[in-house]
Image 1 (spheres, one colour):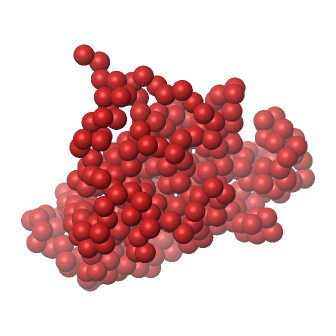
Image 2 (image 1 turned 90 degrees about the vertical axis):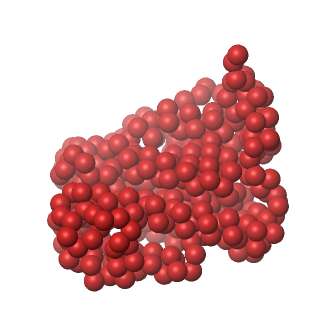
Amino acid sequence: MVLSRVDIERHEQQTLAPYATLSGLSRGRVYPLDEHQLRTSFQRDRDRIIHSAAFRRLEYKTQVFIPHEKDHFRTRLTHTIEVAQIARTLARSLRLNEDLTEAVALVHDLGHTPFGHAGEDILDELLADRGGFNHNRQSLRVVDILEQRYPDHPGLNLTYEVREGIVKHETSTPVDAPGFDSDQQPTLEAALVDIADEIAYNSHDIDDGLSAGIISFEDLRDSDFFKSLVGCVPSVGKDATGDYQRYALVRVLVDRMATDVINETSSRIERFGISDLDSVRRSPEKVCAYSEGMATLVYQLKDFLRGRLYNHARLVTMSERARDILTTIFRAILHDPALMPQRFRKMLDGERLEIVAADYIAGMTDRYAEKVYGEVGG
């Protein structure tokens, strides 16, 4: 017997928590769309995201380390997949909507630039007179405007809930987008993706940093967060060596943080009286969170990464080269818009040149940016 969309929606009603986001109660899409016989609205969103060109390009965008330096360094794509896996595990344990969670996880970095966060910082400076650059806002532009796959509407035409997950994904600069109430909390599914993102990059940046030789276990052993993990599994102890110790550390980091989030979020749901989706949105505090003790350890871990990894000379050198590449391309386009493909030039009828140039550059992979840089005289 074929499992239909109606069957799936009925199963969600019967099995998910009362504060979960149900597919059948989505606020819908900007452009009305007939329901699919077999897939729910959030499943269709997930599929549209995976089949988008922007998603494929994540394979060749830097996460922290330039991917071609070692075959197993994370890229923006592998990071996204890891976020989706962690987020689905959290959602399943809390009886939330896994399909919505996965869709938000897969879409959350579509607007990221080449060359990691360095690229975002550079575009933010170049667009200082035009409101700056924010990768969440850019992700929304990607799914609402820049992806061109359907003749009857721009973008991917995703549901409100997935687009809200983009808008309310936590960054240092919040995104103010029409149609989304900034005073309301996001769905629990979207909130879990925020934390899953942090769990993924904290643990996996440690992994890649160790693999690259920029940080060592000797560096880690002096930190409180590492001391709290020793003894959790034998191979995180001082006598273990090599890759097995690194793999064990990553497993423990992910497991400890994820388990803590599940327990703390469950506790807050009960403590805050969360009974339905409306009470989630009206909550004065975050519902999805670390416990106080784990939050302190995570802060220490992030502080360690800032001091020992992100500001390392190798990564600073990469950032300086990224600045030269992206600034050169940006200025070349301002001088000659014909350097952009026709579909971007057509956007100039309704958009400022600086914004369209940023759209084009943000969508580039690292290697394509290098290619264009060479072509414009870099």
